[in-house]
Length: 309
Image 1 (cartoon, rainbow, N blue to C red):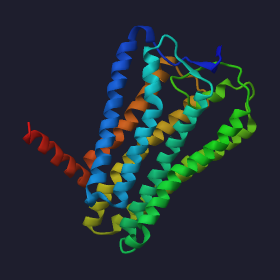
Image 2 (image 1 turned 90 degrees about the horizontal axis):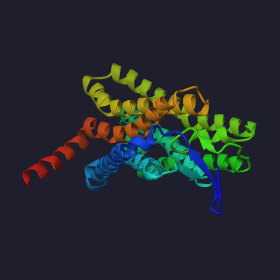
Image 3 (image 1 turned 90 degrees about the vertical axis):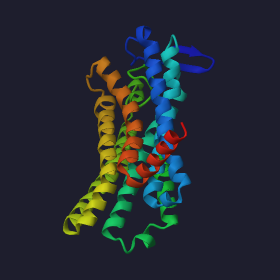
Image 4 (image 1 turned 60 degrees about the vertical axis):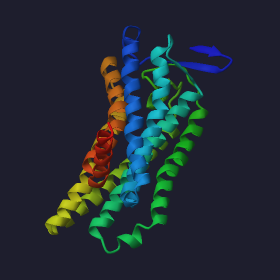
């Protein structure tokens, strides 16, 4: 523990061989962070600029990629600073705040994926009603709810957590996540129950809704023409890939971090780096390559750059 006039400092004990590889870690993760910002921002700008992409599906994709930028920015600047620091510490007030933003954005991702699955369901299963259902106001409402609901629900958990005393000042991680619950003097039953409620409300229920909508799409497209099946495959496959990837991340966070599984420090460190690296980079690559309209605009930009060299 390190007490100063700024408050209590927690030690981040999840780093491996930092004294030996600090500059290697820094260069790799700094490069990854720049790639995350550039890749996500490029597709967001494409959707913003081109009016042909001003459709609900692409607006949801832009929101998902913007969410990835916020998610990375919540972690990377502090992580990069820790790689170069002699002590890897974080102030106690900032630690719950980082965890709050981290899980708020993670929950928003699930809700955005649920909104995208609903959009695809209406588009493929109810094409004649699509313009009436997926109006501009509906899209805005779904976006607002996707970001606002997690913020409100997690604010309650922060209030509950603020009243608890801490007895340990070492976190088994490289940033603040569920591991902050392991430093409590006494485990709060109320907080644990509310945690289960949030998990159901912001992860499991949206996941079940997504699986239901894609099952319905699969059944209807199987009974329909080849054109409908092709459309379903082209637009739904990227969303499913992102969903599977993100579900693996949530599973790791619950099993390894929240339940404090006996997991080797090196493996935990590598897994954490892979999650904060792979997921934010995976989304723009998948949508850039698999979404026909986005891929077409990206190809035009690349061809334009080649011509002016």
